[in-house]
Length: 351
Image (cartoon, rainbow, N blue to C red; front, side, top):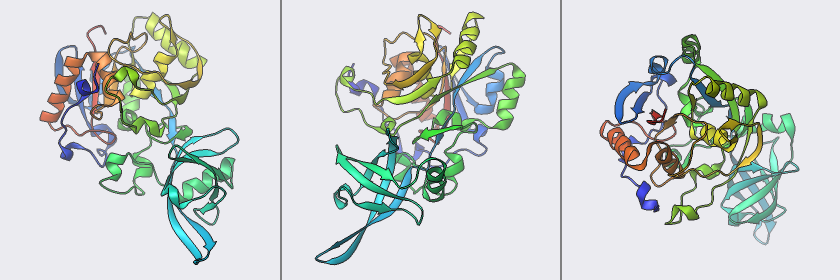
């Protein structure tokens, strides 16, 4: 498989920079087998069947985008530089890896000040990233970060507008619980309280898993042969309770439908012999056409970037030709794309 197999032309005007309001009013492309229907997210109450189980990612996005200053004394006297930091991943001992711009403006051992309460020391620099040691930890760190940090919007949104106060709600799922993600599980952004209540009344059940989405989700694939691509690892957890719930749904002959590619990747990582197992740790599962799905009977997801690993995942679920037809329909009907865009519900023939 070549990277070009997963390419398509997307009009720039279809990249969403704000979500639908209310969340559940977004459009929903329903693809079941060979059929395509144009619906809205609230129609899930009619589309899903009693006994279906949705698997939801309850990670919580941290306000990982920080702006600070670096001060330095030298022959030119006191100088300072504005430094932009995007937190990437926590490390053992409390340090964080981070993108620092401009990286050339900082040295190991220097302090970056973000607010009166929050600062970080540059521990080391390598491979275009820095390792930072913050002056606070635990709840104190969380409070200071929430006070001054901004939501780390995807680059294709930040190219069009800066993050603002509205994003602290818009870029967080209704059920966000476990802090640690630097990108949202965006298919879940379409759900609100009334929709969840209506689904429960319909007899649709829910299980919660945790996958902390990393900034690597936005990294481009740089190899021509997709088999040579190395996925970034992300930390996830499937509790014994969630595993048992999903296994019970499968045993009853009902469908398990993850909401978002993150939830799908995690449950397939935790599957063995068609059964869910409790899981805690990193996963770098790479799902491409030919993958044998053990748990997922479908997928609710947004519309993804050309030549991305997520395009490969949906092509594995639905078939490459089918996905090309789905995306051609979405573009022709002017669906809104990417993180703040519209949704699709993909149900392959086997389900």
